[in-house]
Image (cartoon, rainbow, N blue to C red; front, side, top):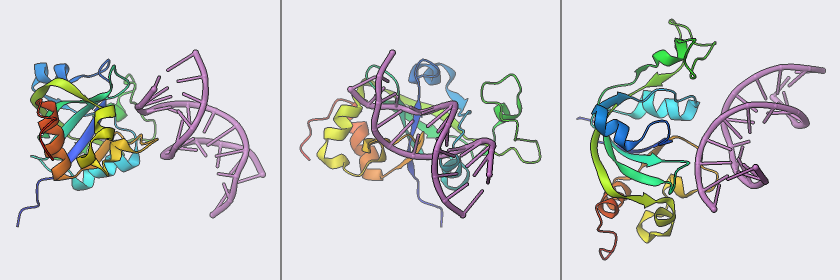
Length: 162
DNA sequence: GCCAACGTTGGC
DNA sequence: GCCAACGTTGGC
């Protein structure tokens, strides 16, 4: 039996890489993740086809900007081996690249940002990791019902009865 | 720009 | 293996 499709939230600083950049490119390697828990999610649990809420952090406002999908399995992150990259890690080697990435494909940009404030205020989104204080993980699992809810909010249906 | 939260590093 | 120092994240 095929593994069930999963859902994720992936953070990016729009000054560095935004939903518009992903839309323009169509697809992009999600490189530069340098946190072990986030890496493990990519390496061990992400599958092609998984849904992604693309979250703009350190933004005005911060929040979910659109939807993407995981378009390939985890593979070594070449930027860890690139001395000129800001993501270079001197401990990484071709034999032990340490860090991985997944490729991510654009699906849709919401007509508006679903702000962190809204995420925190919505009664149906209790338990979302991103609501937790001090939650810095750049890749977080999202429950299917939460994913659907945020997509509905982003498309402008935030006031649908619960 | 502040600072709380928290992951990583390194001395011991 | 402990834990203080340090660095980064990210909301505000």
